[in-house]
Length: 450
Image 1 (cartoon, one colour):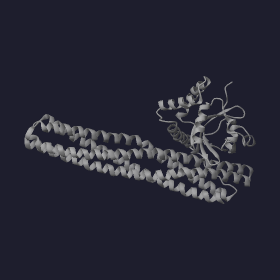
Image 2 (cartoon, one colour):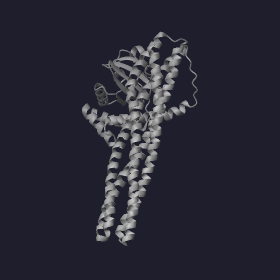
Image 3 (cartoon, one colour):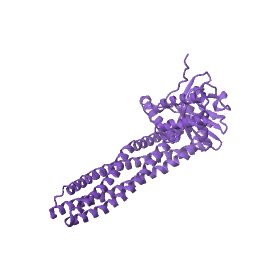
Image 4 (cartoon, one colour):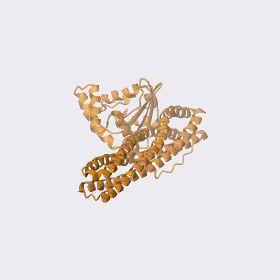
């Protein structure tokens, strides 16, 4: 008989809080239902009570190594319910002063399938006597073969991929649902309204950051084209100087043109180097922003999910108890602390993105000016050829190459300028969504404090 699954929906999220030894202190309704333990059976028990035998021990060693260093960690985990059923989650855990907080969702991305195969291989290694360190090394080597420089890069990519996949599935399940929830307590209605607003803004911010991230590949191609053109210009300049020298005295005016062009290519090289440095900063900021806003969004949605759970429970029983309110506000305050720590990175990175995007546009403007100088020198070169009566095919060919490079350069710069201008507009919209999140989080603080 095949193992059965303890199922849960794509819109459901898990929550649990443990002490520093991994003893469960709190868990939400989804965690309790899917694990098939009662609340009493879970509380004060070690979190490994739900550990599944198909999980490599190496993964947990890696998991705890991050947490003990004070760093958040994300991983795919197969768990076992009380009745022996399995359920997979994508779990993200955060270290706190007095323990660890974990939020989990249903994994659905293409990376999930690859990880399941990887875990089978690691399990086989462990069964064959490999140490946990060997298992971790094998995991890292495999991830590198898939294009990830480290486990940390993999988990960041996995988080955003899972949220993107979840969004697609949620769009289908939520588009026909009309929410008309209203509790029997005004403070909870306010909390629900604000958490709804905050979640919507977080999703919008994530979508805008995803758009920036998706556009990076085009920007990379454009920036690489600029760097290549700068190298080609230098090559043509050298050849132009050689061709001018072969003409002897009659080629001296052209040598002057060539020397001026050589100076200009020096300016181009300097400007392109500056552009490369700014672009690297921008590329890193976009990726950092993508992960940071994904993390914040995950935490914000967990807070909303807790609110929905408590509200559904109170509507079922017809009352909202003090214990429910304490459970909600206590756990939301824990999440709020994590959101505060992470969202500060979001606001800083968001401001950096705007600043760097403007720097890119300034750098492009500088390159455009020297490109105009290339066009002038090309025209002067043709005039000098006509004046001296030179019929050098080599020289004419070099000037033709310069003309073509100038046009390519202009076209590439124009395209890059359009991309950066679009990016700047997206960054400004992103800031707008983030300001809404900041405002909503302040309101949540006030409600929790009451």
